[in-house]
Length: 368
Image (tube, rainbow, N blue to C red; front, side, top):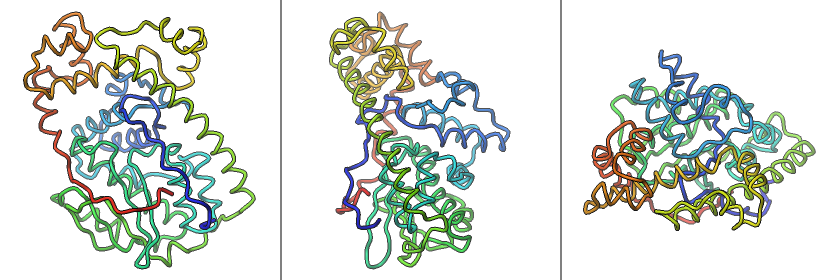
C-alpha cells in the first residue's frame, strides 16, 4: 500500500466558520473535563451544541466552535496538559470507518498515511502531513490558523501527538515510543506527563510541531491487516470524501457570498435563486451539512467583526455598520454572545493573540 500514488492535499476550508469537523475531540474532552469536575454543557449549549445534538452521528462543528469549547475547558480545568489527557483517552473506534481502515492496513506506515489521507473525516483540528526519511518517519501537525489562542494551540498539538502514540500502542504494542518529538510552543512548567507518555527526547519552541517515528516501527505489520477489508472500507471513505467535498463547497460559496454582500445580508430566498435551487432544497442541503443559513450568516459576521476590531482606526459604530448590525447595541449583544466579553475587551484579546506562535519553515513533504 505504501506504493500508492500521492493523494491530493487535505481538504481544509479557508474560513473558520464552516461546520465541517466531526466532533470526536469534543466528545472526549467532555469526558475528561467531567473527571476534573467541570461541566462543559453550558458552553456547548451556548454554541448550539446541546446533548441531543452531540449524540448525533451527523453532527459537524466549525473550527471556531471547537476552539471556543477547548479554550473554555482549559480555563475551567486549569489543566495545562488537558490536550494530552484527551488524546490519551481515545480509541480507534471513535474514528468510525477510518479507524477500521487503519486497523486493516498492512503496516503502521500505511495506517498513518490512511489517516492523513482521510484526516478530514477523522475530526482532526490540525493539518497532518508525513514524509519517510532515512533517519525516521516524520509527522508534522500544523495549525490551520497560526494566530490561534496559545492555550488552544497547545491543546491541539498535545492532543494530536498523544492520540497517535496512544492508538499506536493499542494497535501494535505498549512498547512503542517515538524517536523524537518537537513542539512549536514554549516548554510548560511541568514536562513530567509529556515525558511519561512519549518516552523519547523532546524539544520545545521548535519551528514546527514534529514527531519522528523509528523506521522499524513504521514498517511494523498491523495485527488486523486485511487487504480485502481495507479496499472495501477505503471505497466507502472515498464516497464520504466526495460527499463532504460537495458540502464544503456549498458552505464556502455561501460564506463568500455573504461576506461580499456585507453590510447587506442576502435573503435566504435570494441565495436559493443564485444556486438555481428551491428554498426547501437548499435548506435540506444545509441540514445535511449540519448547519443553517442563519448560523452561516452569524459566523461570517463574527469573522468580519474580529477583522474590523484589529484595525485601531475602526470605531464601534464603524464595526457595527460594516458588519451589518443595526446599531452598536446590537453589535455589543452579538460580541457578548460569541465571546462573553465586551467589544473593546475583545479587541485587546484579538490583538494579543494575532502574533503567530511560530513562522514555520515549509520543507517539501507528502500530504499522504
